[in-house]
Image: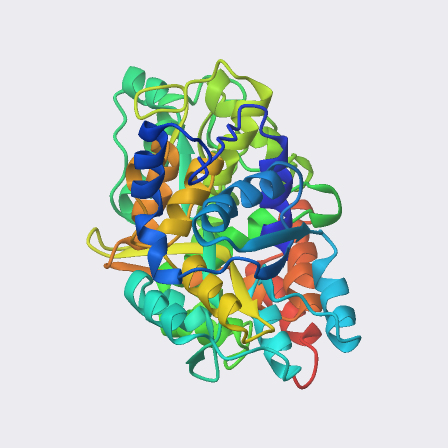
Length: 457
């Protein structure tokens, strides 16, 4: 749950986040309001009259996200008559199995990774996805997302939200001043790196890339994103899947080669670490601070998920996040211009009840109506549901949504979140720190992780 925890923590800290109440249907007695409510409830007629029915939902969404979740459910409640109770807990992964064993499972649970979905399915307590929910998943989600929502080749969950990680942050203002252009291929990105290094050779502390891996107990995770993105670009989607599932060794020659491409950038002292020091400083630099260099001109490029916008918004509300402002991002380019690859994550809903009202609510969660209600309820939220009204998203979130829903995008779930915990959020994290902090080679890092892979997993 590495990325989920990071993202949730950031979202809760967004001081600029806007929670917008979703208007309830029939909440006013005026004729004008009645007409409006009728129009708003039209898409909900398919769910029928659920008056008096109760549906319990258990998620990891708390604080502002929890409030936004309740607001996103409110129109379903007002238009159908159902009562939806939401409970959020960051201890869901620990508490849900206990509740299932004791016979007090919620009607629906939203889980932060596919591995947890499989674990719940293995309990034998997960209900079959309703026909209408399955139809919506098939209609509004790409095959990649349907695959991640599946266990044993069958769609068993609903990908209710998403996040996109394969982005390079930069300062459009600084790029314009220097005459730099956004690269369209990996080679162009390398060429841009060389140009920035050459142009700023006499400026002390100014480097093309700014990178930070320090993050307390989760230190190292930004480094795993670098490697995962390289594997996705320098091999292919199938090889990435095999690597993550350990069907090929962690230190397979293809993976070593991809890792070395990362090293060509991040192990070069001419290229890193803008505003913080040399290559070794990457291990001790806070990932939350890494983006500051783009604003003060000490760095020009930073690889980071789009949720980093939260950092800018909370640390300095005056920073303009726009295509011509202080900060913006572009998708990390692939080897070829027409090939698009995106690393990301998301949350998946499963049901523990097959009651008719729960099946109706499942269909709602997979629908454009839920996606739109959730987007209205809180900024900074995205989904891979192609039925979403894009106008509800702020520009930076639309950038992520476009990448996630592009038919030409090869989407892959964050690898370390899919690996056994002792690897993905354990030795993988630690070895990325050692790669920079101790100067270990790509081969040594991958060999160490391969040797630590638990038997039978």
